[in-house]
Image (cartoon, rainbow, N blue to C red; front, side, top):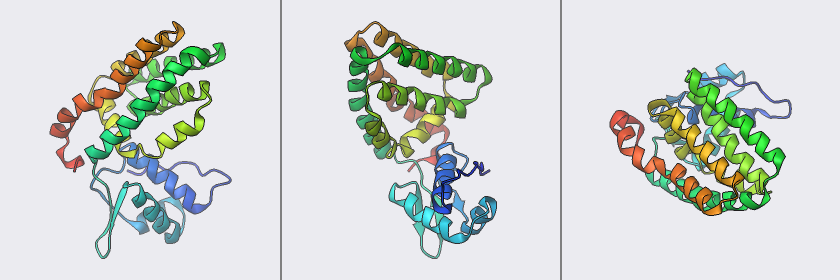
Length: 225
């Protein structure tokens, strides 16, 4: 079922629809391969059909939806080639970022990361994997901010839709605590100013998807190309 988000004051209808659809696709409320109705989404979100149509076109550019004339619009199935390319980009950049963080991180940055980890622990207790994904993203964003690389983080996010859907499946199907433990170890290596260990831990953290994808495809073959 579509999760309706509150509309921001400065958002136009098109921007709002794109944000809501992206959120629902990544969080698997809209399933891979699912047919989505322009009329239904317009009605649920209280907008006209035009911004919904424009949102579909925009999301098709990042392969989040597929538009078939005379047939309709479908949520794209997960493309493991795109997942691997996204993982590769993240791995290269985030290994560099944690090495930078060992030199640049401030006490305030460490406090923010530790507070984030406490919230992650709460999600594990509640089994709230969707909230954990959001906190996971914010943990990584805080690392980029600590190194004055926010633009780089935003660039990565623009190509993460297929990778993020595998991550949400991982959190739902696998061990949520494993993700939190990875983050704790990465932060400890940064606090220790151990660049090599921090980079090695980040690579391990971002490479898990390679080993988990076989299991996930067996459990949910209908979600994958």
